[in-house]
Image 1: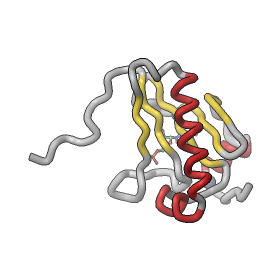
Image 2: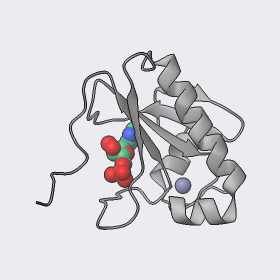
Image 3: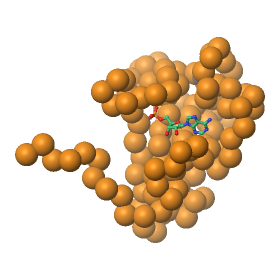
Image 4: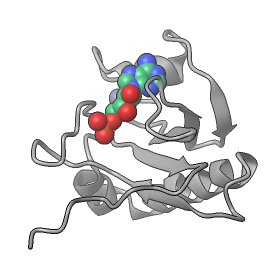
Amino acid sequence: MNKEPDCIFCSIIAGDIPSTEVATSEHAYAFRDLHPAAPSHIVVVPKRHHPNVNELSHTDPELTGHVVALAAEAATKDGLDADGWRLLTNTGEHAGQTVQHVHFHVLGGERLGPLNAPRN
Ligand code: AMP
Ligand code: ZN
């Protein structure tokens, strides 16, 4: 794996920073968010470092599929399928991306609010 120095998610994948596993595969890892924004809040990452979904999807579309599939598996494991769940990824400053290792959020366990307030 191409571990990026100073990347917190690379350190989690390497086991250097503890995390709570929800699901794992050869290519991706799903773990509990440290500051959950919903009763179930799972972070899903490719094990290989990519900065964001734009770069990931262009350089490795197959891996993009693996990560989304693990997100679905993690949601199922957390019992979210009956009532539904949300998958989202933040890219760049306007979206508020704080960790520069691409990650998808799985959110569920309660009725979720709108993504954004309507603009008009
Ligand atoms: P974003 O704001 O989309 O970049 O999401 C980054 C997410 O990573 C936030 O929801 C953080 O709570 C979460 N996070 C940061 N550090 C850790 C950690 N050590 N373990 C689990 N989740 C983390
Ligand atoms: Zn990384």
